[in-house]
Image (cartoon, rainbow, N blue to C red; front, side, top):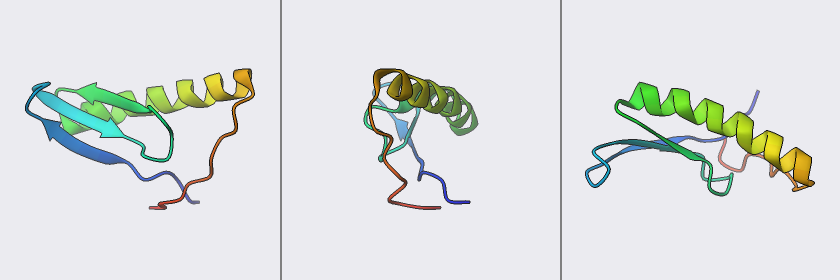
Length: 66
């Protein structure tokens, strides 16, 4: 199954890790560790899909597959 690419990087400014799904506008999350950021991103991804569906916003297909 294809899924969305996830980028995880350390942010000196935020003093933690940011996890981001580039294909889903504004879908990102923060954590103290890369694992925590990824876990939080899964929650954010579910919320993003729920909000898109309820507002009728189209859900883009993954462009950068893993």
